[in-house]
Amino acid sequence: MVTYTTDKLKQALKHFFGYDDFRLDQLSVIQNVLAGTDVMGIMPTGGGKSICYQLPAMLLPGITIVVSPLIALMKDQVDSLLANGIHAAFLNSSQSADEQREVIMQAQAGNVKLLYIAPERIPANSSAFIDFLRRLNPSLFAVDEAHCISSWGHDFRPEYLKLAILKQCFPTTPVIALTASADKLTQDDIIKKLDIPSAKVFISSFNRPNIYYYIRPKQNTMARIAEYIMKHRNDCGIIYTLSRASTEDIAGKLHVMGIKAAYYHAGIDANERSRVQEAFQKDEVKVIVATIAFGMGIDKSNVRFVIHYDVPKNIEGYYQETGRAGRDGLKSDAILFYSRGDIMKLKGFATVEGNAEQTVISMNKLKKMEQFCESDTCRRQYLMQYFGEPFPAYCGSCDYCMSSLEERDATVDAQKFLSAVVRTGERYGVGYIIDILRGSSAEKIQPAHKELKTYGIGKDLKREEWEWLARQMLNNGFIERSNDQYAALILNDKSKAILKGESKLMLVMQKEQKLSVMEEEEF
Ligand code: ADP
Ligand code: ZN
Image 1 (cartoon, rainbow, N blue to C red):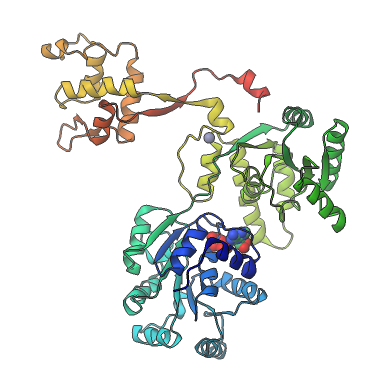
Image 2 (image 1 turned 135 degrees about the vertical axis):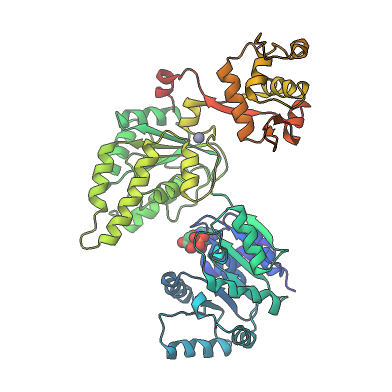
């Protein structure tokens, strides 16, 4: 078997697809596939799943079979592969019988590297399907949108169940299953249905932990940007605006302030554009003020901030643009200036005359952008969930989390609570335990319990605070209820670890006092 070093694979990526580097888990996934291992790759939409089988297809001998339900996209994918000089073809119900026969002939003659098949084109009769595959003798099976095989998924396709025979009939041919659906039940089901129990699972995240997200009202915007940039004089950054005129205007103002700024938009000539780009790359220009035309080709690792002077028209664009910050992994800022006026303006642009369908799509995306700016939640959680990735309600590194929430170490309180549960024999509910902690003199308290060391040790917290803590512990599995009719609080392994001091209980809560005046001026 040929082994491929990382460098070799990077060269191949560049050679076949023109990309400089792998993204997310692409490299590991590809290395495993090439070593003959079954793989399940979970990557967010737009993460780059296709490369995970397209590059192996180019490096393996023979043909790769790609099963994909997205007929509408199949032709585009195949066309763009063909444009890259890669022999790809597809079989789906949009083709005539003659066209399909021609594709099958070409594939059997060894003239196709990647053959996309829609599930409804898989022969109904499994022996016909196997014969067809045997004649092609594939090197790799790629199952795209693999959640379609699972009735747990949101898009079950019964035809996908026919894929179960791949592993039985071709035990040594690797299978790569790809999906953006990260839920665990679906993942397990995919592995079971495809019969690939030893598949290596890769779950990629879209999260960029070193980028701090801020959303600010669009007021005195130029002054605030100027102030920010003066404070970060040595840093490089990008300011995005929606109009060409404002890129020139803002760059001019920064220039007057002595900042090495330049503007960039599709209206300036190609030579000037590449000159600006190069100057930025070399740190000769510190700040680029640009329309979204800027960024496609740039590969600059030390962009410390990305500022959106105008609201972007959708989350995808916003995330891609902010993603140009902090490629070196160092702390970077993404600052967005928000106004309803911008949303109104964007609504005007979103209306595509004579294309109702496109208008609805654009409007919905804009709605999400508006929600993102207006919602009272962790910015990062909103973004991750938008891309289908579950994320906790607290990131600690966005303006919402930093100004409204704080994480507190509640281990000592949890230990008090748990030890009251243990000492009363794991036979009581939340109310009684709180009575013990707060030293209640109520009649229902057993006399023996008034002698306990824990009796009255929790007077420092209010009843509601203890109730809140108990609820958090139950919700997060740090304590449980018995299964009998009493539903008494009982300990589990997590509670024991807390009691022994082996693990901590960190809880996120609203800050009691918002430092709003101070925070407003700080980025
Ligand atoms: P998915 O199927 O995960 O939604 P795609 O495979 O369609 O995503 O890729 C999304 C986009 O990312 C495509 O435009 C693709 O060309 C691009 N892309 C994929 N891998 C890379 C890479 N390593 N470097 C740059 N761009 C990439
Ligand atoms: Zn956050």
